[in-house]
View 1 (tube, rainbow, N blue to C red):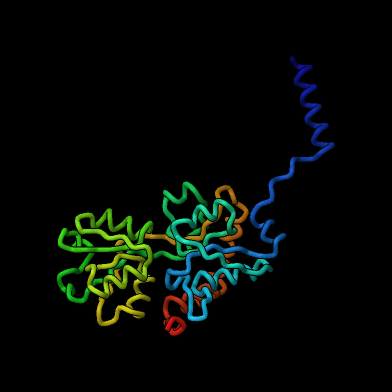
View 2: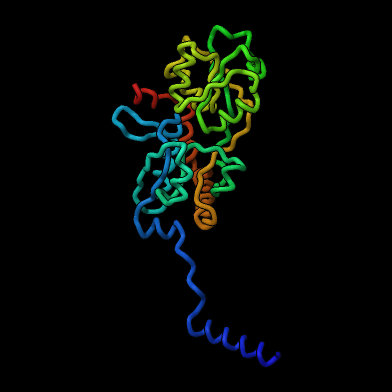
Length: 268
């Protein structure tokens, strides 16, 4: 037995000396550098993270961050517009390298994809018909069968509404814009969605019709997503995020999209 073990060990050592260690599969970072392009998947309908201006260009917070990311890599940027309901499958089938679309990091999603560290924390808020001001002060007041509430299909807004406002009549919408318009027109009593989007929507089309109850009632970390097992890319993204938060880049982009509202003129 000892002779056999010694023989196997000797053969393994000889194999390593002759051929060296087996090469690892090329990761996403290597593919991006070889291709010379960073492909970013997003659904351009979620203000102010990503949206389309009058010229048909995709703009937004995530777009500006993606531009800085590509610059740091020394490559070109390609934005891949993708429908929300197919955005995770598109990432998994290599339609793009990274998902940057204001996605909430949830345990369910994390079973399918990996996330970098969160880059912003948001929560669900309420766009309320102005006629209900005084009657409705928090989401708990909406939890009644006499109220109709809506959110976007397949989002954490929908999940939160079904879980926390379960007694109200719920209506699901394909897009955020459709849900806000229904609230403006009085078809629903409240639209439940992410705070940054609701803040922009009230300025864009809800003034005089809706009131924003802007105190979030959920805790939702937003993060960039990559395919599972892509640890080198995840590590790079975390280091990139740390750098831009320390050198002032993040604050500049955040102010542009979440504090100032000059970008709204590009939509008119």
